[in-house]
Length: 209
Image 1: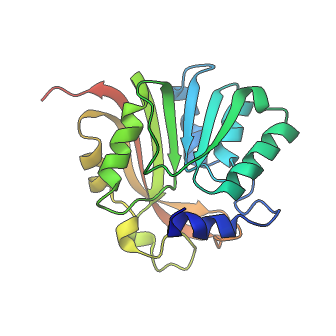
Image 2 (image 1 turned 180 degrees about the vertical axis):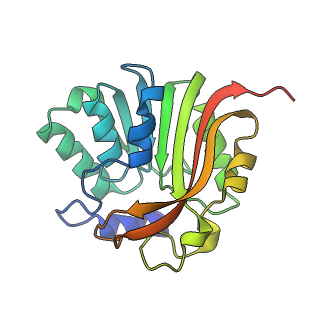
């Protein structure tokens, strides 16, 4: 277990759900793009708040995170909410995972961060995991969010601009790309307030050069 995963595993050690159960708003707004009953990969899903919500909507979800404590709580919630048939939680280091090829109809990637030397490779792995015409929905904090005291990464290089995202996904059809301000809901590690995020929606349709 690397140092980052160990740090998060310790944060997830208690019984409380540190980010609650409310799904990410950008995901909710755009879940209509996913095929009904489709297979969805929720990466860096922590305690499962996004993946479990997707399962409640009738999608078949694989929720993956590196922190064993988070995955344990996601599995427990799936059982309590009677979602186990539609929800599988996996514990693995995404940077070492043997990523599947062409398996998922959509990837949900909400506030999962990689250093600049790893980011393009990990984003490509997510696209490789999609079926043809599959959809990726991604939201992260923008570098301009750092220093606002609202939580999120403390290093600017861990946050992405729209230019970063456009570069990483330039081989594919970009359906939506923006930098915007949005309200951050309070949680164990986030103070409520106005934050800045970068967002992208990508379809696995290669763009002719």
